Image 1 (tube, rainbow, N blue to C red):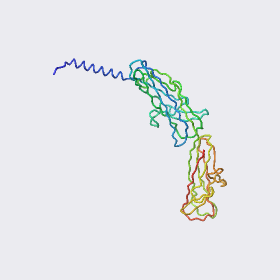
Image 2: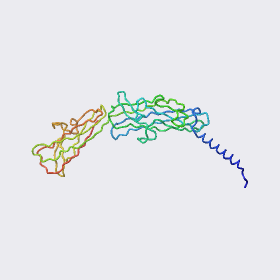
Image 3: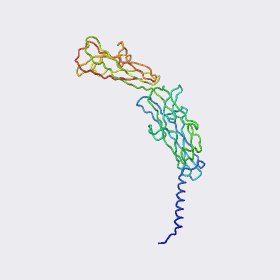
Image 4: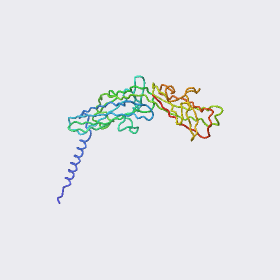
Length: 322
């Protein structure tokens, strides 16, 4: 076996190290002067948005980076920065705001990676664009979601325009978003939502308590219905007839205890003169102002009924029509 001089080993190691360094340099993002990049961001349109509990209002857009270079580049490092938009934002752009022309405000978030608070707030997006024959393009989704379930904002169109370098810009040939590089503006894009009428409903129980007899007069009780609707939304509240087997109207509903029945009525007023039902003229109505509006339900068990002791119950469906 021939003996290779030690000097040859040293030269071989030097050549291999040089090859590794050259490869790493080729794979690293190129300097700004070697490539030109442009960005475009599509509009994010939430469409019809209902601001009520349990509703999910999400949408997305696409950020596209296109780069070119006259050099034999492999990767170009790019940072896109997102500002507040002309709707404004809280500290750190969390959240941003959509606005209408009448002072209405709707909070929303922009995120990268997916929906939900776990993805944080989008302020910067760093990408590496691979080039082939001097050309390359990368696209990523940008996620948006309207926050909160308060219907306090009036209905209508809400927008925020991202325009100029304060709202969206691109830096080319950087190793991270901590470096400025060559910064240029990105074409405008818009985030929009159409706030539609919506309502929330909360209903409690009406408990007449313990009754010793119905011979001396009726027994009265009250319950509450809470409704919250978007500002300017007209609505009505109707009460079903319950589950009694022989209900003839809103004043003659029936509670049940096995085979025994107890007749009662539900009313819109403390004088028990306005029956509350589910037909025209018997519903309660109002116009939403974005706050909770409370309706008192007046219940009356009619006197003179002869029934056996026990617990009597009924279930009445409450419906908000808007």
